[in-house]
Image 1 (cartoon, helix red, strand yellow):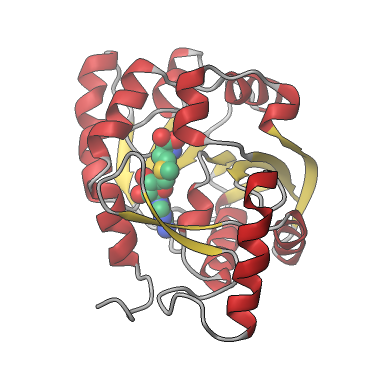
Image 2: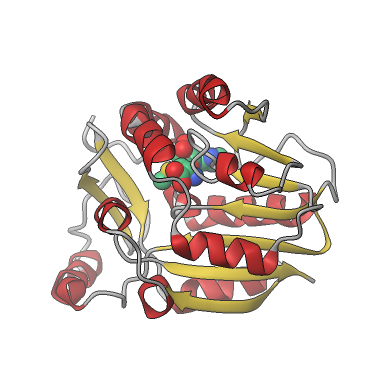
Length: 250
Ligand SMILES: C[S@@+](CC[C@H](N)C(=O)[O-])C[C@H]1O[C@@H](n2cnc3c(N)ncnc32)[C@H](O)[C@@H]1O
């Protein structure tokens, strides 16, 4: 029903329809230049790493091949995990991929040296309160001083959307927004890659900065990808602009 708020089932359905496209991106493109540089700078090869929202393993397989062999992939969408497990044969690896929800992680406290949540996955969790739950879980499973790296879109990133956000703010003030949404910044858009519409929260820098502070993370660095890296057309077309967040559990 169109008035129903976006649920976890909506998110799973959105990603189920994108499996082939994510699998192709995993096999043909893999790590972005930006990710490669950031991971090499901030992760140690001996780190025990959780690749959260791993999808079909786009970041997991290359990291493993680069020597980060103590890595595990976890994703909400069962079909993503199934495909990632199948791709172990393609990449000649034996990485463990498991189904799991970032808001309720199936790991003991202090299990990982680093957690990554690539390609804006944290922002596909509906509701600020649920994203905070995920941050609390990531904090819990990280060791002290552990690293958490993720990306988000950013409402201030692209001038072409400024008018849209101004108009959207007015719709929220008048309670005329799409009733499926929870908060200003939420979007449901027809996807370029998945066959169903996709939900994503587009935050401001201030929102994420505050939310990280609220959940005990210290920010080490944040920057727009395009300010530092020249990505291939394939990467830019599929992913658009994003902001990197490099943080540490304190
Ligand atoms: C944009 S895709 C990125 C997939 C992969 N990391 C990549 O870069 O190709 C976001 C992923 O986050 C997963 N996801 C969404 N909500 C999640 C949650 N609550 N817990 C774990 N994974 C989640 C989705 O199933 C999806 O596979």
